[in-house]
Length: 579
Image (cartoon, rainbow, N blue to C red; front, side):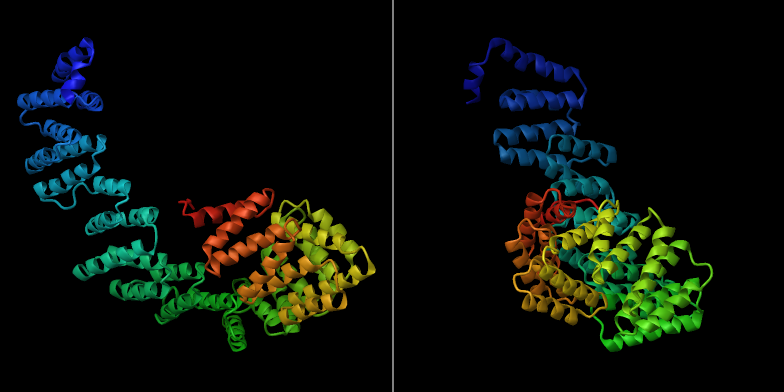
């Protein structure tokens, strides 16, 4: 077949292929030019010409293995697979004990996109040089390029046997090629085998801990951390850092166990006090996550009180005062105690201005709970004036508008909300817009006004952390004022209450109802985003989450939720998104 093609070629081309190109190759000692020549011949399927040229080069350079590699390629392109393999094996069996020459041979193969053979040369080169740690970076690059996850794992573990500095790179690269739990389990199994053979290698132990964290197996990670802490007689630094990681990932129970272990090291340990404070703070996070009983809350309040007794009421313990006040106000139904606690906090000298402003806002909220709205307005006003054009000042103005709404002073609340709609703080601007629309959309009749007052009262009940009473108040609106215009607002409000109380299924039902009959309403985009989040994080239906995120992106391109929706959609689709 080759001869037939050859006979139909123009004489000038035949002359170039048979005479000029081979001569050019012989005259030039340049691998790149030789490769170009070979590629030209192979692309035009002139295998016989290429074979003759390469064999001539081999005769003239019998010690050069690169021409034998070219010969193997010619055979393979021509379909002579057996001859190709035998030729390549002769090269492998003849590798010189020279690192540079081996690397050059593998490089030639890589440039020809013969990645598997390049890998074989590197691996055989290790045997020839009797060095299992050589060519690590080249092999890692090849395995990563080929996305050969198992070989990549093995090579990183091989590297970590002598190069602990490779650990950070392994923790960065492996997630970029891993596609699911099975890949992490393969890593785990390989690590456990290595640890059995080399239990003193701390790099393996660290990577195993990292793997457990990636898999969200936080208790297993903690078990390894405690074993490591005892083995290397650490001062607790590594464990304390990981406890913070557990908190960041909302693994509060595991974090508390970690802090408890650190406390067992005794008061003389530098992490004793930080662990004690962090443990209490983590229990507070558990409370906010809805996983604490009344008994737990009472114990937590006592712990904050204990911190204040032990360390005094000063700036270092200010966080304990603020969180104790929050427990008293919203969980122990003792707003008067909370009021006293925060008033005491404001008397502490040396408080930073911003923190003082935050405490005043918290105190203003508690004045609302204790039936002192004018005192609350005073606190909000002071903060708004002191922090004009700052986020905390804008927040104070919004809280003042919200309180006016809850009191039924709709005209003033709307005027304030209309000003805040232009805020550079997007969340506040969005809340202000919703408040303004809520008022303007539901004051057309006397009945609407009465229904809106009940709705405002329900907001106040929820603000006081009385969700059952708030829902009852909302439900009574429909009974007393049928066919009112607050239906969508009530659905959104109630769904938020159920989400806070971890009743995700009920919340989803309400959000679906809202989306179903309010495709372009005030709450439609937020309802879509919220429902998509429920499917993604709580209801474990990622396909439905993708559908909802896509609908939000398509139907509401101007929504403030679009940017986040796009990120979540791409993540669920499997895109490799850099953090």
